[in-house]
Image 1 (cartoon, rainbow, N blue to C red):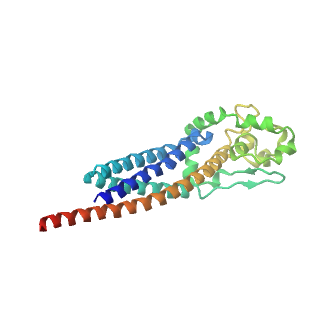
Image 2: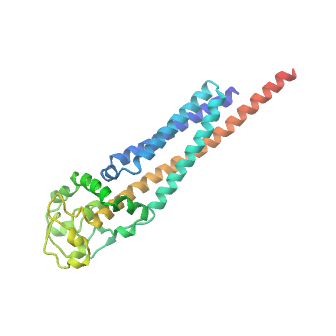
Image 3: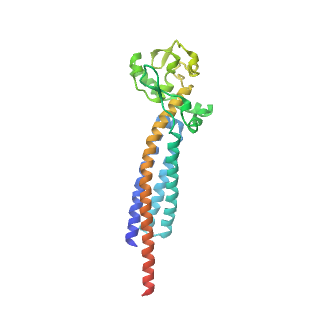
Length: 269
């Protein structure tokens, strides 16, 4: 019994360690400018990681002090949390499976179409109430101002590999035919009818293309890239947690079997 409890305790300590990458992933997302403006995934990830940490700690205490009811509670709660983590991993994969940029002639950077992304993600930025809050948050960052400092010549900018938010929010769509003055100042559009976003462009540095659908698409593209990275970490942690949980179940069953055998032996003698 003591050996099995030691195994269960060690397993729960490993489970406690596995909560760290989950919490860390949530904190990383919270510190990314785009995710900090949208506030969708980071808190569920952080909360789930903290719950796994608390449940694993309870299992560790139950094994160390040999409290059977606490171990049973740990096994039930950890199973629920593993299922929730698995659902989250699948959900993130499904909502980020769509959406990719497309190339424009003589441009190294990609441009993005809002309709290419999943309906669930689009609904996060469709309503004016939600987008006004996100837009105000994005406009406080220096991501567009950085372009003016980095690229002085038009060809240098056209050959740059800027991130999706910069592509969608800091400049007008390429098909509008604006003339480059600097990365955030464009004049004399050739084809205003090419896209509704052509009418939304404004050289005011507080507005730019923040009202454009291309800005929403660029934001979602950035979020997609970060969520896919986070999903890989969560998937690896999930597989490790399942392995740890199965070993813990076997150790608990062996501990109960040893306990029953010990009681039977005592009764027999």
